[in-house]
Structure formats: C-alpha cells, structure tokens
Image 1 (cartoon, rainbow, N blue to C red):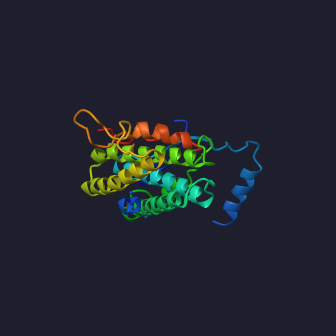
Image 2 (image 1 turned 180 degrees about the vertical axis):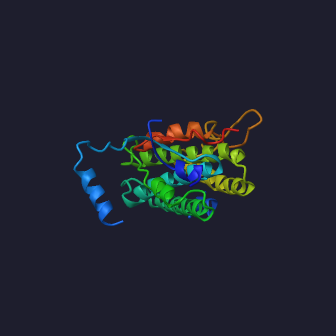
Image 3 (image 1 turned 90 degrees about the vertical axis):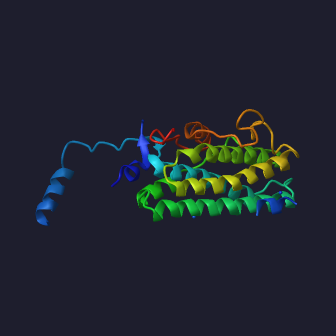
Length: 242
C-alpha cells in the first residue's frame, strides 16, 4: 500500500443568470480459544480525533473531492427542504449549481479511483466524512444564500490556491477548469444575495498584482474553515505548500 493510500484514513491525535451558470484448523481454533480465555482485555482502538488527507497530488485531489462533497451535500439539503421565502427563481439557480457540484464530485471521485490515487478503503473513509450545519441558518432565504456565499467563496479560493501546487499538469488543468465554474457559482450567489456584489473585495482582489482575480487560499487555511462544518477536523499536514 502506498503512502497516499495508507494515509487516507481518520488519524488518531495527530447568471438571465442561468445562462451564466450553464465523478489451519484445530490448532488455530485452540489458539483462538486460549486467547479468548486469557485474562488480558484487548486494547481498545484509539479514537480518531482528526481526519488526515494523503500527501502530494493524491492529497490535493482528495482535498478538492472533499470540498465538492461538502458543496453538493449542502445544496441537496437546501433543495430538499427549502425555506418558504426562497423564490422559484432562487431554487432554479440553486438546483443548477447543485447539478454542477454533483458532476464535479463524481469527476474527482473517478480521478481518485481510476488513477489509483487512493484505494477503496481510502475512498470509503473520505465518503464517510460527515458534515455539520448547526452553525448555519438554513430556515430562511437570507441564511441559505449567506451560507451558499460562504461555501462558494471558500471553494473558489481553495481552487485558486491549489492550482500551482500540483506536479501533474493534467490535474492542474482540471483544477483551472473547475475554478472557472466555481467562480461563476460564487458570482451568481453573491448577486442573488446582494445585486452587484459579485466582485466585492473579499471575493475578488481589487489591488496589487492579483487585481481582477478571485481570492486564493492555501489548503491549510481552507481546511481550518472547512473543519467548522465537519464532525472531525480535517488536516493535510502532508499536502504540498509550494
């Protein structure tokens, strides 16, 4: 098992708008019986306190997969039980975004599997990460769109910060394409919440060499934010930083 595969498990301690939007028998038995009759109780499994991502490109793809899982799960929750003041136009746009997030999630899941970046246990562990929305207000339009803005801004910034960290140009190009779509999501949600705010300074840099580009965040910063919405903190101590 590779380092990327073995590391991919919980660790102890350690747009009209819609146009704009368009992955050996007896001896063994006797031994077992003797062991079962022993005085010593088996040591308990250590309780996981964090979820550690793999290293290298595998970890970066897994990181993006987890973010897309979070986004897709959020929108699924909203469109399944939408607040009463969410308009039909709002819902249509959120459904469009949800479909995109599902496609991104399945695409990245396929990349992980088909390129053997992680094994089946690794995928299962990642899919098993649970999300917690207790800190979000999802009972009214304002709360839903504010939460969606936070999630889309985080995803867009994550992609902006991860592109240059890949060693594989294939994964790099994939991240660029995903970033373009996520940027549209962010702009759309922002415009729903507050018309004309799609290029606000907290989303798009207005000064310096990065002016006009979406904000970018390193994986460590993104994981700190993401961990506010997961039952276990997500860490990526082996992810590239340069």
